[in-house]
Length: 166
Image 1 (cartoon, rainbow, N blue to C red):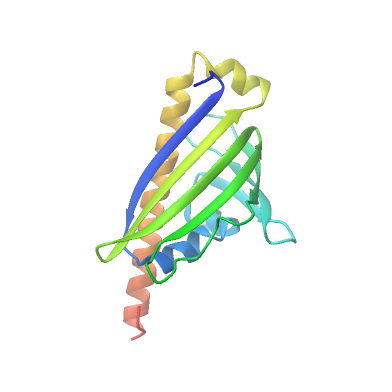
Image 2: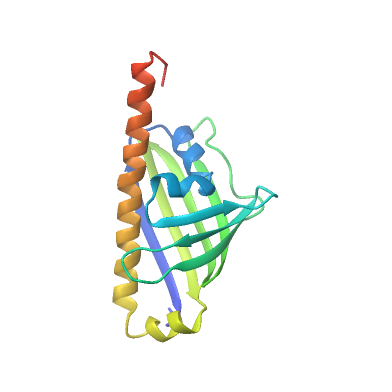
């Protein structure tokens, strides 16, 4: 792998069926409500792109634009499998995506991101700081998993409390 390129993978076990998880992940403009490291996120008027500012542990705000890729994104079908894919540009450039599949009573959400750092500062830090940048990403994803699990659990408990089917 080239020095400025990164490939990240995460696997999240979530306490909700794939359609509910997809509904949350398909609305990145809502991420700041539940994912603390996603500081801002705005949808563009076209509804298929937007911008975000994220910051994990390192004191650096990563600014990106995200655009849904044509074709491969699809809500979970009868088999429960769903896919979200997007292109990312800005401080980093590449692709990211989620693959959702049923796992027991919940969902296995598999995240993959392949990006190249673009800004001069990130390129400068990329060689000596690669382990730190990877750790920074891992901590952000771990916090995201915890926050999404909590959101789905709260929503499930709230539905039961109102006598709604979940």
